Length: 180
View 1 (cartoon, rainbow, N blue to C red):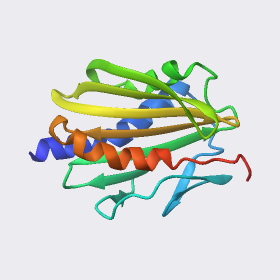
View 2 (view 1 turned 90 degrees about the vertical axis):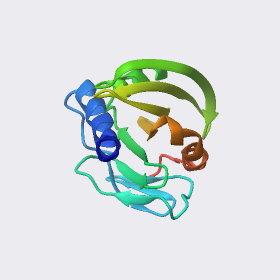
View 3 (view 1 turned 120 degrees about the vertical axis):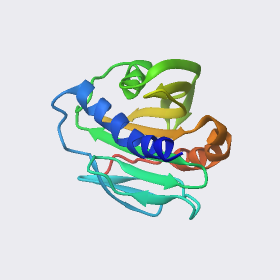
View 4 (view 1 turned 135 degrees about the horizontal axis):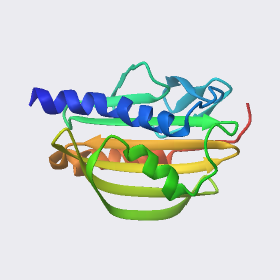
């Protein structure tokens, strides 16, 4: 049990680090620096997100992402942003694949394109393992106004369906005007 909890706690930074590593030399403009309820603060602005229930509490890690933990669900929810051409202008499915670095036995179950804040977005559901421990992951990736926004949920398979509605509310609240 402790091992699974520890793996889930480190999963968010691993995903964020993998994203940074894939883009190599990522500029720091636009990276997230703080969170106020419903608002993710970046170095040059902010973007809106949906509110989370109080059972999700912020965990601060030494990465450019906003991370939340829910002990009941043993799950982590995160968001990050890269702006000012700090990412490849690749298709959303390629940008999504960068989030899976470091995982084993990745099985994408479903990819769903949709519109979010007047831009095309991609939602991906997958099963994977990290150091032999099974996890379920849900990601949403969207590009808007020279920024890439990632949202991801990492959960043990048995708690995934319980954590998913909160994740959906969180990313569905996304609004970004591009104004600084």
